[in-house]
Length: 252
Length: 312
Image (tube, rainbow over all chains, first blue to last red; front, side, top):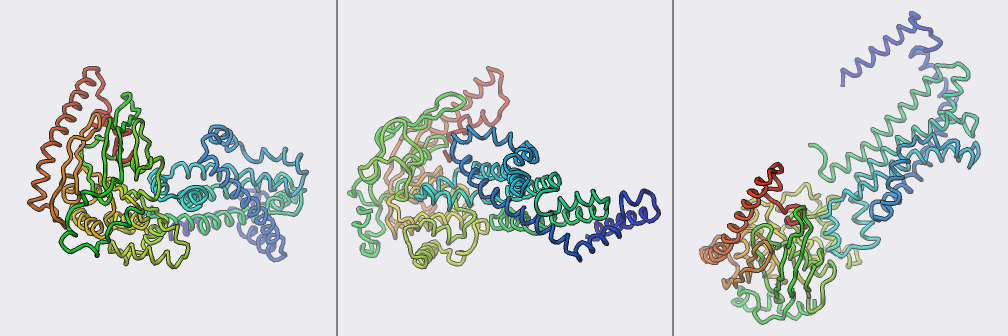
């Protein structure tokens, strides 16, 4: 724990020293003190907090839809062979497609609007969730299914009480991945549609570039990193660990 | 179920006859008629069961023993309805068995408990028909008490030992209140002490509940200690070689001289079967060698494990 912190401080010190001694053009790459000042100013005047809120609302909205749709699609794909044969390869193809490639279509369909950004974000997460859920269901040990059948569980009850809980660890991993994909897609979407709707973090980042305010660009990047780490460590990894402990999968 | 209810409850039976073996005149509960099962393997079609017929009386404890690959687990899975027969028919109370159901509870070699549920929740899963949640919890706890696991009701399966897990599985199966209890090598993965303990426990529970039990094992002592009748199976193709009524009083102790005497009679027969398998397998290895391929050790030692192991 001490070593990474010491290393981190060293990097910051070097960065600040380089900036002060003008080892490089300071305006292209401001030092940490400048970035911090920009961050504090942005938080004080509320613009950064507002942008963060706007982005997070978009993210949570699109991600929730992706989670719901992806779980449904994943269950269908995992349990109905015909569906798997038909759309399985298609899903893999869509998963490899960078979601930002949906933006031109989205703009034609929805106009340069809020919906276009949401759509791109949704498409970024959807396939990751779908594939994880479907894999999770297909990897359920056959023994569980035989036990369930033996106890007379079928129909909706089989899905609700056996298939979904059995696939739950995979679903959480899928959600974690889906969240990461959604986050990237949202930023790509916001960066490429600066003029669209409310100012999210991506648009704020781009505006910083337009104003040649590299401190603001770096400050926004800092927020993006913090949100990414917090979501991953505090939400998804915690959830994952809890499930793993309950199932007895965690290393002691 | 009806048939089962008409049988006397254990406390109504006079003290002496209580320890006698299963009823000789009870109606037929399970009937297999000329059942054959074939599997596709890499070596082509393999006959797992060939023309097997067997009748099991209500309240009887029948043990199936035989060398691995003789189709005893297959037979059990057919009665469970988890596997269809290619030829022949299986009846329960005269009605053809077509699919799995809670009237035929299965206890698998591995406990097959759901890892996301606690012990008591696992038992509750079998009690879906009880609508009232409190009543359901109470029934589940009662069943856990029957296998002496009340203290571990709130433990998750991974927190329990192998023997405890298997006991939860037994409690879960009993909670279904099945007509027939099907046990597929339930103690094969346990250590000897735990196994002996569970043999005694199963015997006690059977004396209390008098369920019809089909118990698959490769352990002859286990079969002789538990069964009213031991059905000895042979392999390639799977068939019934010998049936032996175990006319010993209950409860029986594991490794008792009397049980050992019965075990000897079965072992003698089983030895021939095992010798036959070993001979066939060495022939197989020779044949493979002659063809110049002895690479895959799994295939040489257990040419059929792909489909004929103790699962399905």
